[in-house]
Amino acid sequence: GAFEMKRGMTLVCGMDLGRRPALVVGQMGADGVLRVMDEVTTWDAKMNSGRGGLQSVDVVQFYEEWVRPKLVNEYDFPRCRHIVFADPAGKNFTETSSISAIDLLRGKGLNVVACDKIPCSSGESADIANANDVGIRLRCVSAALRNTRYGEPELQVSDRCSMLVQGMGGKYCFRKMRALGGDGAERYDDKPDKNDFSHVCDAHHSSAPSHI
Image 1 (cartoon, rainbow, N blue to C red):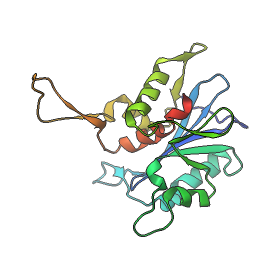
Image 2 (cartoon, rainbow, N blue to C red; image 1 turned 30 degrees about the vertical axis):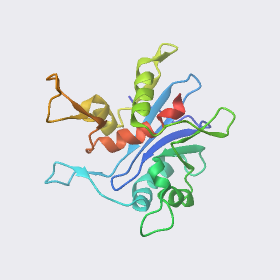
Image 3 (cartoon, rainbow, N blue to C red; image 1 turned 135 degrees about the horizontal axis):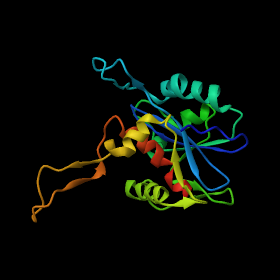
């Protein structure tokens, strides 16, 4: 089902940057349950002869055309309290700009932090070693899927997040290697394959260490 935004509670978002960016929007309830309420992607059903696909856009276009309208119309932005955990690569300058993607988004009013900087309970920021390591982020999500709080799953995803649901259902996966191991066993890449569903899953994982 769908989850309603709880007024007065902080929006906890994750963002994947790059040419096919994605955003997920959630809230951590007083019961300790993380409810992922929404997703924002550049999916266009008309692409690829009607099969659909993700548009390639820059981060400013993504914010202006997809993210901001969603947050303003449905989540009381910019008045709402929010934090957006983003890929640390977003701190890097590009060859054509002296402003990083994260700084561009901050200039637009988003409270963005790199996902290697996680707020402590005291409100200060602390480094979590290798927080951007995909293995750590996947284990955080896996633990939340297994755990319960007061009889409810610790991680719940709204059916509004159709691409995230499909990704977590198997379309976000490890690519099988062509060569078998010396023991004849199948081998897989050590990082999930990049496809239409990986970006929104990576966005979700960007905020995963914050839920530890």
